[in-house]
Length: 371
Image 1 (cartoon, rainbow, N blue to C red):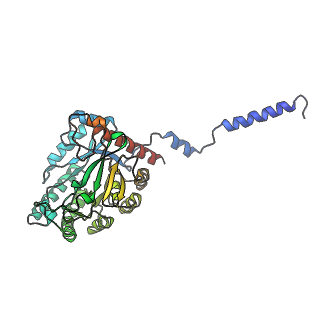
Image 2 (image 1 turned 90 degrees about the horizontal axis):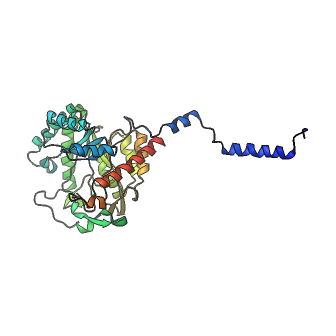
């Protein structure tokens, strides 16, 4: 050993060096350091946009409440058809003044078309005119339904954690309900004939206008609804729909909750339609299914059978750029205590429930963007 250096000092120095090395953070690449510095992750033109549904007459205070929780995009029911460009522009500009972008309008008013009755050609022309007006006004997506009847009679309320309201569905309660007099009963083949006639007429107008159409699936996806067949109540039906007119303008609202209600894997279904560029709108919610198509409960986003983080990662991987709607809030006391509380569904919630949904969805989006 060198003169003047004791064995003890050598051991002490080695131990100190070991402790220093253990305390030091591991070396990181420049790329990893750059990623770590980008928090929160930036939402870009190629990432999902969180939106909420609102009434078209939402006031300035209502818009401010949405901006406070980080919502920049909204959707709502559209006016009566045929839509006019000036009216759409005025609507969109009013929301724009409040810092909100109208990303989607629901179109309706074509019952004769649904049932293949006389008068459908005039309705379809009104829809085509509405699509053209939307394109000129800059509206990117038009959503629609094609139910012969929607079996909402099968919904009932269940009690969730700490008394929160959940929305359940049981087909056994409603499977024997007769057709409604104003709707009648329609076979599955008839409904496919009617949607085919409709899409072949309106999809070219949407392509020309630069507008995407999004058909919402049958929800509930029960086998029959008051005697009528349901064209969008199975995955096979979803796939058949987009093949009627092969175009990104002919797409779907991908609802990961309905996907699980049908017993399907939401991530795989998302991948199938996303790979074909047919997801034109997204509904983000969770369910617990007891029997596919027939018995399930809509639950909080954090407690169902849908892996919502996996769904969000798939949307981010696809660079899906349009709206994602964390819908169907659960009933919370903070909403129930309001005198104006009127839920649309049994067990459904209001603004406070939506705040929870938005916060959860934002966390999923940020985590997916950074992963």
